[in-house]
Amino acid sequence: MIDRVILEKCTGCEACTNICPKQCIHMRADAEGFLQPSVDYNLCISCKKCLNTCPVLNFGRNHSVIDDKKKAYAFRSSSDEFRTISSSGAVFPSLAYPFISQGGVVYGAAFDSSFNLKHKRVDERDELPSLMGSKYLQSEIGNTYKVVKKDISDGKTVLFSGTTCEIEGLKAYLGGNPDRLFCVDLICMGVPSPIAWEKYKETYFGTENISSINFKNKHEGWHSFSFHLERKDGTVFHENGFENAYFECMFKGYTLRKSCFTCPYKCESKISDLTMADCWGCENYASDLDDNRGLSMVIYHSDKGEKLLQILESQGILREFDYQNVLKYNPYYYQHHVLPDSGRENFFSLLQTNPKKGFAKYGKNPNKTLTKQIKNGIRGTLRKISGK
Image 1: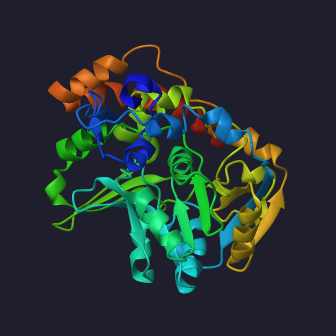
Image 2: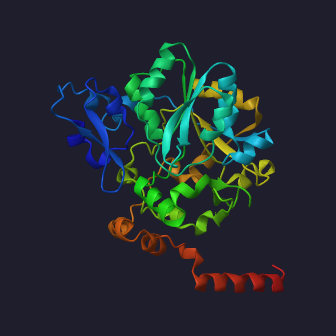
Image 3: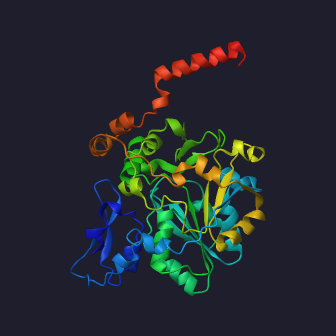
């Protein structure tokens, strides 16, 4: 069954576990901490629903019916509060709050009490902040797809936010595209290992001491994001994202899931209704909207995506720009991350034996070495002297 076929292609979407009529498929962590399907063959009835549902194995079938609109917009919420706590221009809260206000339900990724990431159902406004902000982890889906199906059967309108593979999994599980379901994905370079995250937070901070985490803090501006962590004793850890070891290991590909390096969803035709991302490159096509407090890019793919755009238009500034800028400034929209030439296995080995050494060795920013810092400092001084 699925565990003997999908192997390293598995994205961890959990569609197979949700569709199994005998509940004999469970997600187990592999050596790198990523959840993979495991079948209890004492219960399996060989119905093959897992194989027929898996969105990776059925990519060609599922994508043969997509008519992608491929239109791109810059968006900036009119709410200062939303933009302060959001990673960019606040697309998600600008959609989620109207959904909740009209009796709908919203799904997204939230931390639990141990700062592990899981998908969560929200139907109250005061719970929405837990779903907001970037979280550089893979969310556990659990039985979320089943709950979404029940909400739709009960006549509720659902806004589902997640990675592209999670949305592929949801729609594969549902076997279609219900009218009441609206899906928003994001541009993703890949999902980091849960083990890497566990070792990082425990080694440097102690999970029990953490009170809050912000992966993409904008205290220093949207252009220069920071990792921001607050402890229960009131002390704060704040570090530029490009100097943070956890981020650097992710940027280099050491911590990413193996399937992310061959992800079939790195293509321009998306199964979601709307894609949201940072509006990188905006200085070349929407510079007047960039105040360094966050600007989003949204790409709409379907008629339902157009309805979501209408909501955004009522919540802030929405301006269309040339779709080619998406491809130019957001390569992970359609390109895989490059698999590291070497070091990946050694990094995961060090996570088990000496995680601090692993992060110190593989989490260095190559542009932040002492020599380069000195050279950059000299260049900066010369520019000031020359007036350039």
